[in-house]
Length: 488
Image (cartoon, rainbow, N blue to C red; front, side, top):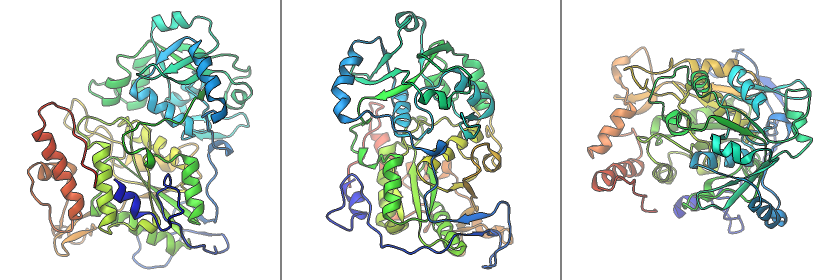
């Protein structure tokens, strides 16, 4: 992976924790209101939907301030000692990923695991109402479950310690005071941690729109979970690290905002993905940048943001995806000068239009003011019936109407397919459908498993070779454990 970092370095003085190039200073034009007709082939612009504002600064985080919950380094030894004297809750891998998400402010303005008022607002309204009456989007519950024994052990404690699989303290869950009053929708202040009933059936039904068995996240994290939820404010003892060789790519919202500012970005467009990048994706991303330049922006920057938390068993693992993304950049499919590659630490729910709101909201907190959304975002096949779980167009429609996302500009996918006449990925032309081939994810995986090559121009050769290596390693490995890729 060292080669991937070297792609981004232009100066020996650039810190190794920020593997991106410096950009030349750009003078921005005066802000104006411009709208763009994406269905037109000409450069003429006319009003389509809400107007898009060309601005110079980064978008403000939800709530006006980025929440950061990691305690100062000077306080960490004291907090560890405090944690050792408290009742303890052991975190699962997914719980730890949520602590990571909360600690860096991806869920701003949340300051910890949800209390009941936040949980109910999230389930029923997909949003939170703040103390000043404003609304921010929040479509997925970020909660911590406990069982009866843990509930009894915690009893009347006003704080608990959260520990990892090695029994090391990760965070303290408590009530830290006035911050709570701003966030809660109740008249009275919260005075302690809060334990409340975990209605798992309702949570699953409202998040996924079904209670059918076989939902990956529900099976992993909810069905067998405790019957209680515990909410409160987090003091995270130190930054969350996974020591898997990829931590340098896990940039926090604060670090991403710093990087975008260093590059003098006047627009940030985010692309969420959990799959390998093919040339259709790249076409979409480069075309988006072209459109933003035509709108009047001077230096739009792409946030290529693969999801790094829990994914279902048949998804390509993160380490292999990152190696594949590396090859895409090495082969020049995307330009490292205007691309920031970072890992989004959230677990994946596969909850379609409900989850895509969370993906978009989190990118606001990282500084993105444009979000690319495609067909069936965050969707999956129905776990029981032979059909998609969600309507393919509902994700982008919901994003355009979702409460609390009004500040974010939604950029719907153009449909890309393999153009046989041009021997490359192009935007689909309905006037000549016979010239196009749609290569599904299933077809792509089948080709890679069989060591067959896709059509020329579908994916860069280096990226395709990584996929072939991954599926080859699965076939050769008898232990059932997914092998790690050999670093480039």
